[in-house]
Length: 319
Image 1 (cartoon, rainbow, N blue to C red):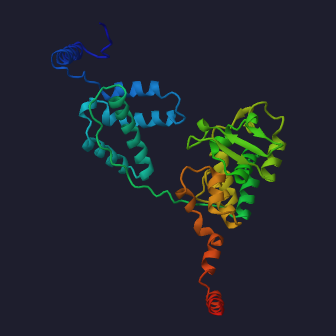
Image 2: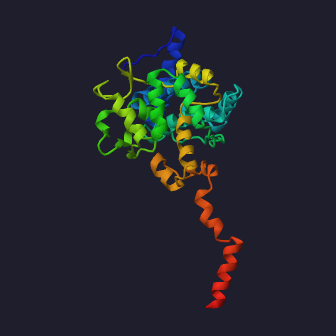
Image 3: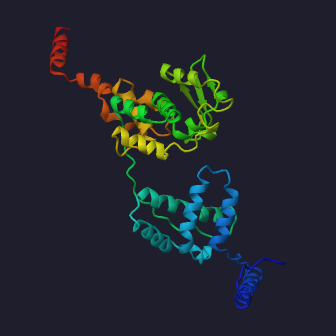
């Protein structure tokens, strides 16, 4: 059997050969699994995860992890080592969500190495960080109009459509005409396109229909394009400059979805209706908007109104 050692000197090659021979002896005589390194696992993981939309982000995370894990065999990666790596990432001043992405990636590789490849016998405990996911930054109608006026035309139309439908950025960027029924005022997001991996039907209000009609004929496949290609990245320099000109701070493209949800609640849409409209996987995600309106609680509040309770008591006495 021949294999590349990737060694840079004769001594390294000899040490590598001796180690491999020892691994084989251990495997044959003791039934011990051959050892595999972190870089080996990363290479195989990347090959099997080509379908991931976030693959380029994962590669960036792996590059950061090289300095911390490349010298380790999988069997020597412990929970203490992973915790030290997490602490080093935290020392960079990043948010807990960023640390969790690193930890989730380590856990994913080790889990696959254990359960699918049988390269290791155990998966070390990974202590995830607590995240604050309750951010609900939203715009008033006046602020939204200012932003839309400052955006380039292609981004302005996409932003308007998001404010009309609440769709996530990727679903707007790659929206195809085949998934839209203008007559029935309806579009479909397929399971593989949805964050919760379930099909999601989206009713289209008149604002959304008007935008779509304006886009008809501009591209045979995709609804929104720039220079004849889908707009893969919405949070561009043009987006950031438009925010500055509009005087809007601390606002991301995804906050357009928060704005859409907030407007719904403020105009009488119930939490259950919003849950179905937004295609969330958990009702907890909708509860973050509950404080914006108390309409859904008015009937409950009136049940112990003093005047009503007195009248109810009188009615019971008359009976």
